Length: 142
Image (cartoon, rainbow, N blue to C red; front, top):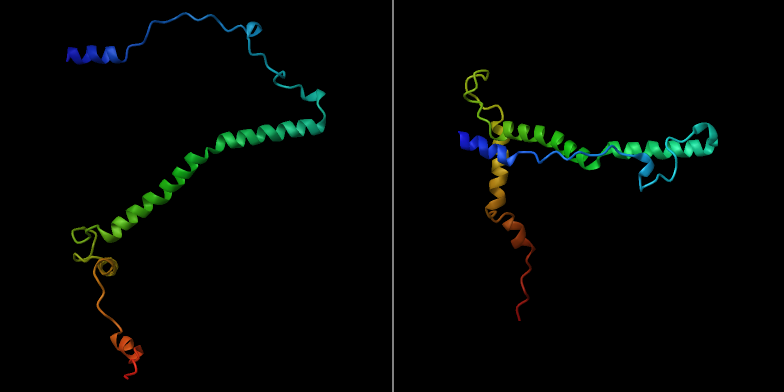
């Protein structure tokens, strides 16, 4: 156990603390182009409106996170759908104590689904043979 503790400490130990000087805004090599926050009393109404519109748009775009929203929506639709499909096609209701007399409530849906799935993979028997033979014209004999 002690070897595990020492390994754990070695893996997650922090490096030595390096003292950092406090940040000096006067010696900053990256000076701001405009003073922030701007003095709204000195701006025209159109410039104030443009600035507000620009930052509202930036905040909205920052908040949206389209990738997160997309995958959250997919999960919100996918998980209940998967549970419903599992319940209808695979779950065994015959041993359920709340069920009546061991019946399978979705047996007719299961039968149709698995029958249709079996028909996809097996070759279909020749149907409509009378229509095929009736539409064939005999070649004129010479």
